[in-house]
Image (cartoon, rainbow, N blue to C red):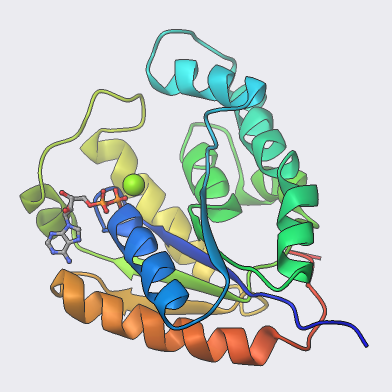
Length: 212
Ligand code: ADP
Ligand code: MG
């Protein structure tokens, strides 16, 4: 008899929505509750591809826009064998950003459409739940300024928000919108509850394929 698989849980949302804070807390809380759980993040800057991405984001190198888009996607694909192995061995994965970020960011550039941007990520392991942490630009701004990375400007982040909204219209993806302007504890409690339910729902289902 096959063992029960873990769930693939993704956190998305604007800069400073609280993704990294909540991802860390969620992993800890799930472990405490007895679920085998690990956290991942994209981009994963420690691989060779990840180093190219890091250098681009930090404005230390310039890369052509299609090229950087494909590198972000490749950075996810290179982790897919590990992701599938973990899920199949019963580990729940909490991922800080996934393909939705990749698409929302590139499609916010001139002359990129959403359809083209999605194609390289078609067929990735499909998240069982995508938690979208929703905050207004004003609330995000109250949590500190931007860093110096390439996408960290108000005008670009506004476009990114619109693209996320378009992606959320796709009902083949299990989106849940969370009011992330609440305090850290309240957001955490909701994420934990939703995730525990997703783990129960996913455990005897096959791993899906994104956007197929
Ligand atoms: P993201 O990963 O989405 O960019 P972070 O988790 O790094 O966001 O959070 C950005 C900043 O906002 C951090 O200083 C964090 O402590 C703070 N923060 C996160 N969530 C909340 C919240 N619900 N209320 C107030 N501040 C928060
Ligand atoms: Mg973060």
